[in-house]
Image 1 (tube, rainbow, N blue to C red):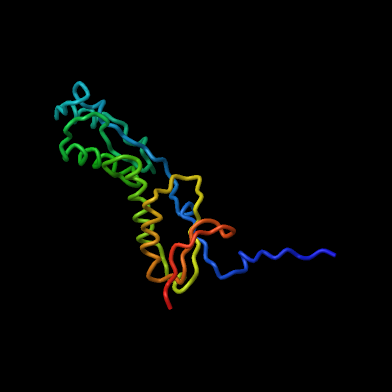
Image 2: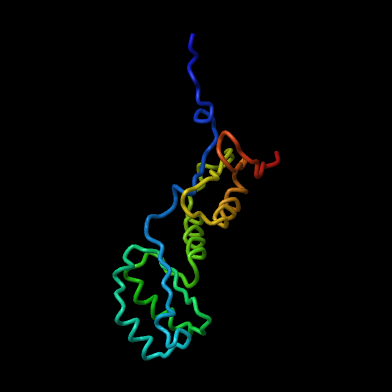
Length: 169
């Protein structure tokens, strides 16, 4: 006598949100400008402009780019603006900072534009494990967006969740 196995999780009213599914395709690149500085620490405008002009910007097509300088140099704002102007036709997103900041900004925009209409008064599980680099701040931003509308919010997997918040009746 065999009983049919019923998947109670898939039959429940729980809504799963997996931020990994929202992760946009595209290479993440850190562009370190230290090699365009004189002796690695001084920005000489003429030489810097020549380096920017001679660089192959097409290699950043459909990429997300973090502009940085790994040396302790003073970089004027116009230098990053000059690079950004060259990157703009190719890159999906440009930030001045590291790859962590880049991911945070990418997810900030994704969560800001995330449609929550179907989540009103629902029980939600935010998936915890991911193979892609989802920044911790993305989860915090998502909680902030969901908190006013969700009935309950849990974190983890359906078989093992951690309660995060429950709206008072």
